[in-house]
Length: 303
Image (cartoon, rainbow, N blue to C red; front, side, top):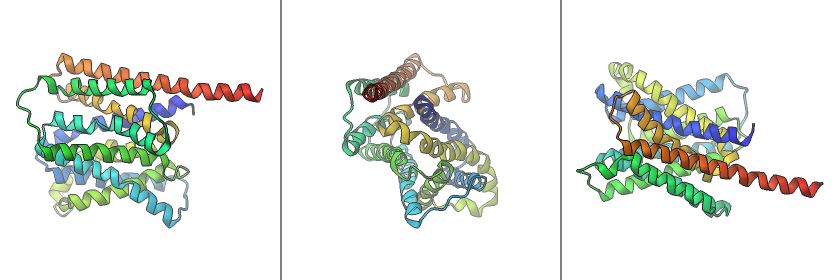
């Protein structure tokens, strides 16, 4: 596949996360608790991921490889736990702004571990994404918002853990088949979530059957597809561009809220969506150009 194909795959992984909030709101409206919704999401997601593994070619992994992938799934589960904790004391718009800080944390990690200093164009794209996120979340035009130190810390921890998950997806066991890798990452996340939110709904048949439709939808778009898509695309685009591409989450949140939930979206929010998309496109264009230059230099040298 071409490089832009991998970038598109990561972009779609971010879009999957944007779909989640709509189903979460519907599940809450149906009377289910945070524990029921989160536990159902990860449980059904893990089951679906391992069912997919059954239909793929068997690959034998060592204990060390399996352990690495399970541990790499821990930040995946922690992101949901931290984010839900942030929502306990922060307005949803503020919580997503804190989560959105992953766009610059990813570039920082790439600089620290891969010695890839962010270029001016990448910093420009990150700036656009942060400005767009503030507009899209509509925090400038909402009243009654209060900051909580605990909420801010939880929100930043969610951003950091999400960035770590993206980073690890790009470097750990790159040769492992994506579906198997995704299932093991998901399992690591499930263990963490079940420790934080014990799956008591499993012992109540009525709750289990009621939360199942929401759990399946959330499991597909929040647990199965993102790790799979990131496992395919992240090793090729890197965590720096990867975190920028996953910023597609917030525009999808806004669009789904408008189309499915019928929420009124203000003009500044739509402007924010456009600014985010411009930031994503500009970063991808710059990335393609920067990768063409080394190839051109290599071709001229060989001739």
